[in-house]
Image (cartoon, rainbow, N blue to C red; front, side, top):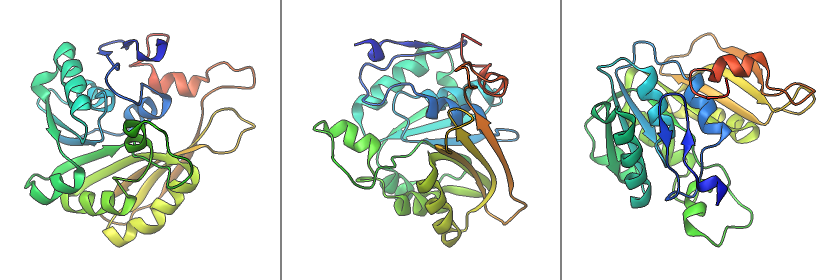
Length: 239
């Protein structure tokens, strides 16, 4: 199928035939948006094909380490293939485990944790179990995610996630209970006249001034905005 074909970025390629969730706008957005300044040890939760981890490897300092975790053996195999082909395999490390188990067993602390987490809490399930795991909060409730982040995040670390707008607002509501406070929010619209569809949130350990802005992907003529091009220009071939 067409969406199983490898996706070529400027500096790496993502093979995606073994994973249910293909390269999409959400993953590219959060990977391009996240601030990696002074970050030396990152964790990508639910790495899938390894897309976000590869974006971090491209952006972060040469001596930085990017850890990537997934519960699916097929994802670990695919991400490992993509890491090796990228030439950044020396900067990356894969873990086959649930984040719940990883957080319980790991002694590592990360100064950046990033995720494009599952977000459907209900509705009809797909007949394909792998897509259920990737898209529904069946095996990764947001409370479990926050418990894990609270244990794994360094005191001066940050969490970056992307979620649909309403789920993102609910995530913010419960985050304070886990010592996580939003410091930057970007609301994402597909076009100027559409409602906010996604929200990207940057959390820190201590309350801070909250910065908010808006990202519009396409203009009224369905052309990519300069703002979107600037954000993703280090990655997409077309920009």
